[in-house]
Length: 214
Image (tube, rainbow, N blue to C red; front, side, top):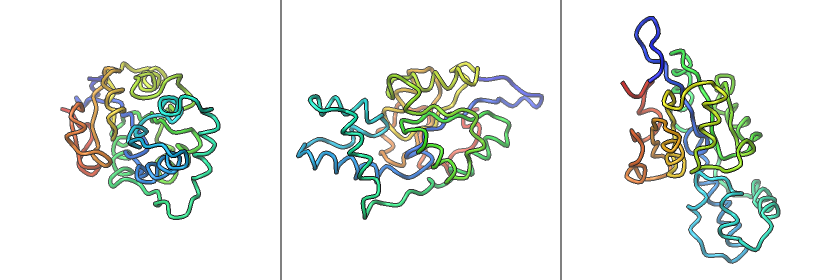
């Protein structure tokens, strides 16, 4: 994987998911999506949204509704009282900085919108270390489709098999593997056994170094 430097080290490219991987937002997101389902008196497992773009999921469970109106409704819940705070996942900033210090390039592939991604990377304190951001607006189809990861590799001008993905969701891991990339599953929002398709599963980002595969 990758090109060896003068010390014989492999400089793989790191591609990070955002929600649930770098920032702890999944419980908050579940509550917001549940508000939408409850408001429409719809009984559905909210886990269907995890790791995926809302605009990809909504037509599946609201086939007769206007997607843009539903998304606007979801945004209206964002400042609802009682929602959990957003905080970095343990080890997130430290790992990103370690990757950068090693000399490897870094990209983000998220199902979130760009303004959210920019704000949250600033919150983690690592925005300047990300060379490429692929967000919900950049692809026609989101995860588990591999388009986002392939676009990130193309923008970085690297081969997919030189990329290591960090993902917390089943949809994200499926997308990474479909793109031909190695994947570290981060068990912050799912049980480790649910992430078994990843090449390596860790409890959080304190439990993995760089590069994660020798």
